[in-house]
Image 1 (cartoon, helix red, strand yellow):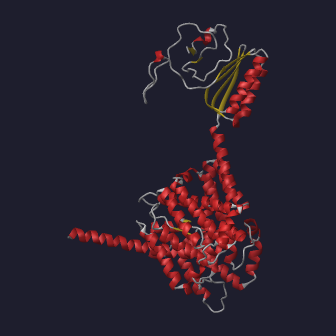
Image 2 (image 1 turned 120 degrees about the horizontal axis):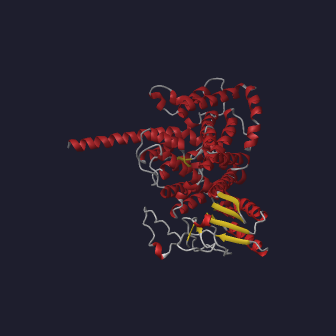
Image 3 (image 1 turned 45 degrees about the vertical axis):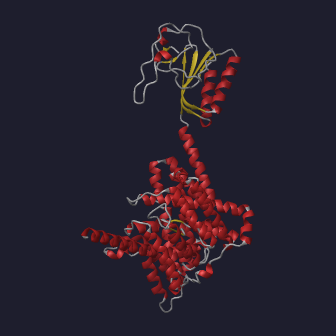
Length: 558
């Protein structure tokens, strides 16, 4: 009985912790859900609906244990562009089919693929999302409307500052937004237990109090009926699937939302020592959430770092906390909608400016520069292209840049050239691919220009010879022979031991020394000491002259 009572007490304590953690996550999620919706150019109710789905649907599903999902600041710019181009009504169809596609990708076990994307591209993508987000939200901070594209928003900042300083009311709004940003950065340094209260909640409370003062006229959030905001896509919206732009948007949402969710899962797994994320079930869970969000015409759902880290730090251990936070969101929106109407928009914009800064993470650029200049270039290119064009174009170009960098690094070819008596020798090692073709051509041309009657091309040290380099070598060999030059060509291939050498060594054993030659062999019928040409090695010209004595010990029998 005492043991049972102790177990019951432990279970009760764990339940209390989960409930407390769910309330903390709710307090962080509420302003973010509304702020993301406003930044996306859609009614704030849709952000709350997506937050509820992220808690009750994705939160209850298998996959991750502590990761929290909902509308994300990272997709705000993409959603805003989509709404401007296709309208709010089409957003539901796009999110719906993105969710279905995510489920399919999870069922075919495609979740792990996202772990193979270059970290430089991921960081560049996040920075490319965060930088425009900060500049776009700088305008709502001052109760103004952003001009449009990221470049236009950046160029319009001086005018925004002038307009803000000229109007006392916009200065009050801007002061609230700036205070929110400052609190978001410094609140964790506040001593005592008060720092456990989310900074966003403190900023919202201050904003409501200031907005209620006499003579203060700042823009506040206008929240309608949550159920009335539901907009189920109809036949007209589904007919839009014939538009290539809609298909492109679906693919873009699928890739970005999946990548952000699974990248966040990897980050959250490093925050705790509990069960690890199962990527394919998590991708299916995200797809289920987006499918329902699409049917209701709400915002797309992804995993969110801010809410997830708050969940971990609050001591949550199970899926209960993230599921309950969705229930609190639903209850608050249905029972206390009038409270939401008191929140200044500039405060929510300040919360998103802080989120944009965390996504931008400027300290990662010098860190990447010190660690790897090539990856720094990929990261910078990805960020720059996203800011200058759009998210999809930036990610695709960043991936292409990463692939080119990897190909260049993998294609490391060492070429040595020297002249010995009447022979021009070219020795290659490493990976000979088309990216190194200019070096290969230069070496071959130098051997031809040496004027020697004999050329030896030794490619036995090449671990990979692609079609372009092979064709160039064979073409050069044929041309030289046609001009009467003796060309010896040894192509790469795995060593093929003879029966006399015995069976191949077991794993971990050293191979026996190759037997030394016991009788003179014609020049050009052997390789360097310790090497045997494989089955693909080809001698296109055999020199029958005796091998000089000083070189005899360097060769072994075939």
